[in-house]
Image (cartoon, rainbow, N blue to C red):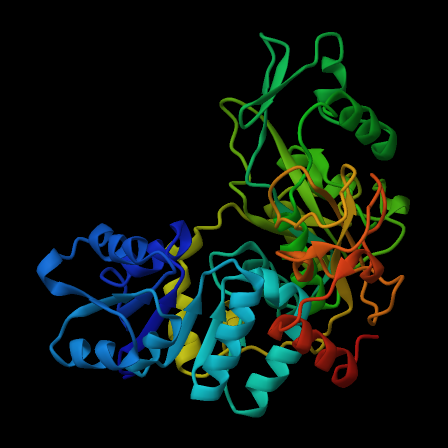
Length: 457
């Protein structure tokens, strides 16, 4: 019987707060200390869990936190290093700040603490070197249940461990394309596209999949495309599975669940793919009363023998000749699921091994084969500070990883918070010559070390 895992959480937004609150519903985990740069947010995470204020106390530093923990208090702090006073088995980084995540990872490494990286921004740029460093110390650095990339890596591992060939894999966008046939509209969040006279392209695809898909995408063009965070998750999943993007901008196919296997299969079987082993993102198209993808993850697979393939085709959506079948997980529950990963990581297990525990699965080592990169969505003035994934500054691509050089693209989340060295015109790929390098950045230093130390090919 395992003892309860001691966990610390840094970053108490929606995700981190869910981890904190779930500790009282999940056996095997305890979160006695949480940190956030806004101490009030950290306190509110415990209040949301139903703890009375008299059981919660603020600590300004590690020494104060250690004293309070001895009294049995649940401790909140705005000092990230104070969380080590709890001697955690595992640290959950939910900051979403790439530079902060790099510092947290190295602090955890120095203290001998396993790390669950919910803050995926740093992971997308320096995940290979961090995994290597943690493994060399016998520690775990892992993605999480609840995050789409962690769930997708897990699903791909399970499919391969089950003897299936992965033709395509990916995630669905959180926002779904909801078709109101009576109103002649398709809604995505608060955005609406008028599809009057173009409804035919929204009906089930028939005939040439590529042609039908292009017409459907044209009809839905007024709706916003995927965000940088979507690309970030898929790049990590690609680096963790050996799958590769179909194209730098991703296909982002707007599809019904029943159409996914028919589109994400090879051309000779009626689909759009020239090759197998690709990773992409679908936008779930449905009516108001239809079942959706729920921001879940999927694989399109085939079995290597006819009998097993017939079983697959009988159990779920498949393409016309039943050579490709869809398997999917129709949800990702953010921090509600993450305690499962924290418990596994505390026991020295990779968080993405949950579905294949005890099974044999050959997976390539995690490599920085792919980078998330940016192009300018508008003109960016010299001296302007680069934003993160949200806002109107960037469009995003996934490209093969390159070593640093003036004309090499900068990994997207290494831009965050730094300044443009020169004017960047709309549509330009943002390269190192466009960026003023930071004076003291652990994230940039880790990337340099990774490029010297890790195999990217």
